[in-house]
Image 1 (cartoon, helix red, strand yellow):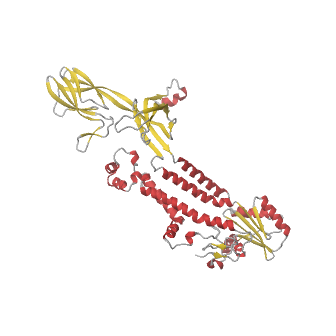
Image 2 (cartoon, rainbow, N blue to C red):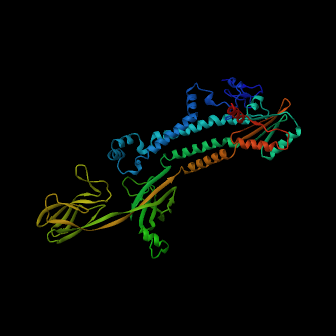
Image 3 (cartoon, one colour):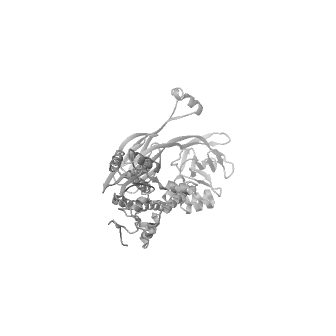
Length: 540
């Protein structure tokens, strides 16, 4: 499409409503209009309002709509709300397809099939975030580039129609050259940038505030980009790691490069006799934890190992991990987040029920129990089955929920020289003899426990983008909220002094400033045409 040349000689892009240089109305439909000019984008040609033929034009026009951007945000917020109804996949222990159906029935199945179980990692949620980012980019480019060009090309001397249709406009019949000089000095004193052309003045300040919303958009785009970086493997890590005392475990998401050994877990409580400052609080609350601490050693694998081969590790550092005092290395942080005590060993006595006579003790390592325990003199105990985390399934058959010994149960076979082997099912506070009353039983003697430290492993390589985006967002908010773009035109037209003014907000402040500028001159305060029109309508 051809560009439009104004009578002032400036060539404007097709679709321009007001000449970028002189402000003359170029749109035939607007020429006879007496209403005030829409100065939001200086009447510049926006691509979305000019081109609509090609497929690219249609995509551009769709995403340049503010309504589309608002609806995308609303849909994303609604999806985020739906994601909070049921626990996310990261907080459950069973396979997602099994858990949601088992716990929530048909609703859980639908929830899982829609991808709400892993909302923030689902492809359609990422697509929504990407579409919001695209909308912000296109909305900004569609407006900021034409606006920048129009403000850069504006001349001092403006078309009469442009001045007449400004909200603040007035005509002065009395001309005094000294008044113009006085006004010019006042404008400079109020930090206006004053340009002069053929005796006409254009005073302008605060143009940078017009870019506030676009700086705001840039900040949002960078913020969204930082959020999407978190879905790239390795950029964001937030994993739980449980390590038993004396054991070494690979640190997750490090590519089996780093290992952590838990030497000791320490739990300390406040003593009301020693910590008298907290005496009343301790008496009211009972035991109050003073310190969670794990003494750990960080190792780094020094060479690649074959599958099944024990890795060769090199000690990096020893550290005492406490709450709010994490171990940091290679961009990772290891926090002390929790602890628990796990059953390590259970001790039983083979006992004759009627006499309570014992024939030996077995110590069952709950992590790696032996199959048979020989007690001598013809007495032995064999473990036929072991359920570390015992429960009954739907068919009333014993099973285990996990490999962690939270609720251990055993099926023992007891052999003695005077009886046929007897079978007994033994769980905590529960003994079942499936083949009738036994002569012998496995009497519980005691347990041994082991502390397990709970760590949170974190790494956030996207944090810089989120922080930068947040800073730019706030700069844009402040830039657009606390300053405003003000322009005052003072021009000699047909032996008269015309005064017109425009601001993007705070019209009261602009009018007060004009009063201060024309003080000590014979010039009259220009009229607020919008206020006059409203007064006339009320009068009618």
